[in-house]
View 1 (tube, rainbow, N blue to C red):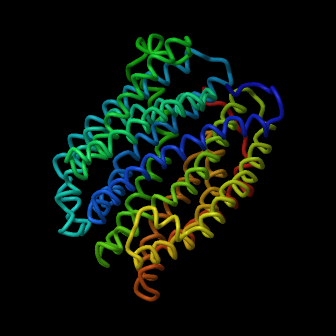
View 2: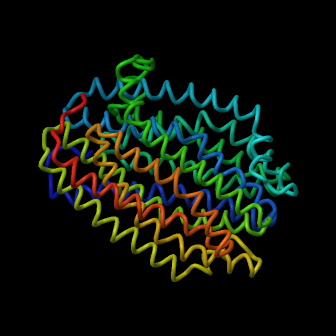
View 3: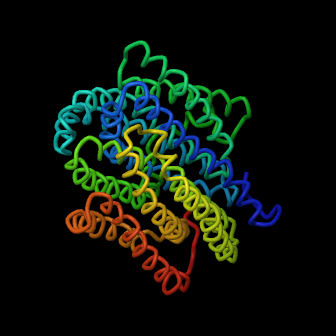
Length: 445
């Protein structure tokens, strides 16, 4: 677990980062395999039905991602300050919130998912399959929410290996169950049932594993703290709202752009899904580096090592350029073979490949901006970085996508993302260097 000054900072950062990147790559691989199964075994319509729900799914889980981020920061500071009781209290409060939130959103989703998909102009040919797929994934939300929060809490204490192992179990279930259920006639919902079973199995393994290791977050030590503590919950929510809002607004922007893409037909929708799957492998490492930067900054603040923050910033930015930039270049060079993993129609493959070459630039810009905002959030600075992120997403993504669609054509809709992330990077860096570094930094716990 990352605490103290054992070894050079960059080696500890990399040791923390490597399992985190592998976790996100494995998470992307799980979704990729499911979509390959759907596209190859059931056809383009099945793939389009599944990806039609993806932006809505990201919208639904945005709040719990925010809870996880807020808990990571508080747990990181408490861990750096050797306050184990505070670690457990934060964990209990956040896990209780994740369960309640998952049940509530699941119920609300069942009431209106068909109308939401219709509002997105989901092609009529795939709407029944999209609704069936969404219903099963809604059932999986409580387990999925707890899995997300549990992984975030573990990262706060510097443990990125256990979440990787938990996700490996989830992915294994998905790899085995999805094709089996497709062959059994479960249709497009096969992938969703596999996600549900995998998350339940992963959580059961996690409870057993942490108890066996007498971990600081072992289930037996958390039971007395599974309740809402007002002050801690308010801190978690305050720190997590920016991330939750970022994913919420980002998902709404994705949904708006998807409506533009859907207007071009089923093939355009299928290309959207393939592009999203490939881009996950580039964007998730960028997000992992930002998370690692935030955790190391939080632990440094909790431990009173404020001079270490500048070093964390340099390492985060450098690794983003090296890792995310390298992956972006690789995807640009192999865009057509990557798109062919999901698609068989030559025209759709060509569209997806050209879009990928546009999108990869945005991931590098997004990753660097996220390092700046993540480090500021680790110190409790949330308002201005949040305003910058949300302002760019709300005011630029859809208007630019609409403009590019009208003037340049379908494939250029996606240029809205690199343009938006570039503006965000400039603004985050300007505030970080021009304002935030001049302010005092205090621990939150």
